[in-house]
Amino acid sequence: MGLPLCVAVRMLYHYYFYLSIFFVTCVSVDRYLAIVHPLRSLVLRGRRMTCLLCAAVWVSALVLSTPVASLTQIQTCPGSNRTICSLYVLLTDTRGSLPFSLLCCAIGFSFPLLSICYLGLRSVRELRRSPFCPGRYNKRRRLLSATLLLFVLVYLPYHLCRSAAIVMRAVYSDNTDSWRIPDLAFSLTQVEAVTPVCSLPQPPPRS
Image (cartoon, rainbow, N blue to C red; front, side, top):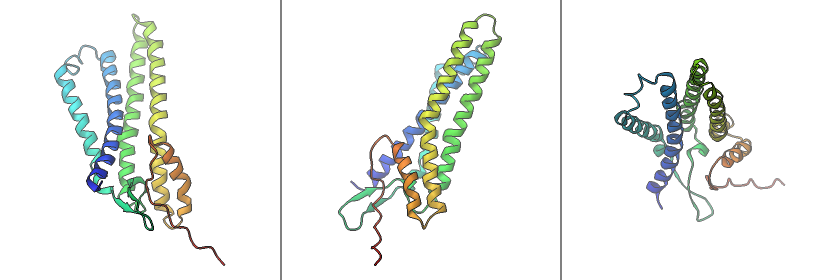
């Protein structure tokens, strides 16, 4: 239905993906403030600050997703009547997609993961020191372990496979056969079955 709708679909997918990561991180920050700084955080955890924080998270995710618009393309497959809304991850030219993917991995995944680990450990250590809630220590420790495990299982495969697919295109630009396994792994991390690129033409058989 045209390039504008193609760009909108790709941006929204990217936008809500990282929006979910940022809000999971915000929940960890909120729990940390409630446990480690219960009195000083009353102002920060009020309704007004919460609304401002939510707005900041939405804007940050939007800024992080804006480059997707310039990396999205419409492809018309040769020899057929198919038009493909391409994924920037699977473009042959990686001059824009590789730096953007690495930036998203650093800001949208690595930093939130490290923040959740640090804040969770600080919260567990604070509960362990408190003589009034020994039961909450074990409960919080189990909750932290489950949160980290789910975070890694949900978000790590996507980032690893996406980076691998782009890096293989950058390193082996002339060997399209080396792209197939990373592309297959990346497609398995998607929530929908898509045909992101046109099928590559097969070389004629040698005589």
